[in-house]
Amino acid sequence: MKAKRYLFAVLMAVFSVLVHAQVVLGTGGKDGTYFALANDMVRKCGKEVTISVQETAGSQANIQGIIDNKFTAGIVQFDVMRYYEEKDSAMARIKVLFPLHEEEIHLIGVNKTYKEGGFMGFGAKSVELQSIKDLSGKTVVAWGGSHLSAEYFQYKLQIPFTLVD
Image 1 (cartoon, rainbow, N blue to C red):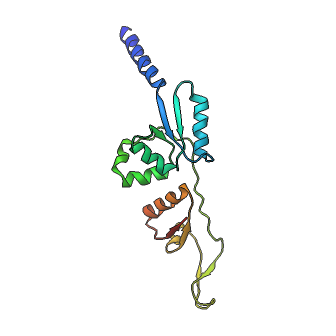
Image 2 (image 1 turned 45 degrees about the vertical axis):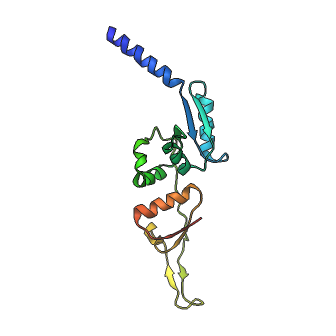
């Protein structure tokens, strides 16, 4: 019984140190979801943990900020984290604490067959998108964090498309 009390006292001491920790949290732009999530965390946890919300350019900046020891934590898209894990050995010391929410990726394409190439309609080839692999050789437009998501899919799935903002 004495050992249990001792263990409980040690755990409480450790917990009290952790409870008063300061977290420097990389988020995203002030109008974005990550910044809003971070401010919600401050409202809910601000009495127990000091959270310093840092506006950033998003997932990439947050990962780099953690690697460079500018942030203790960051809100990051899962696919962006996976992309960096395969490209940067410094990611080995970064761990996922918990998922905040699932992010969806919307792939929008033409919903009918269209003509591509040729001259004034002659010799044009009919194109129909049936799967993500059909993006090979096409131009894909992505913006914000989705740009790196598209780059990750291009890399993982080995689909050679042109990526533009």
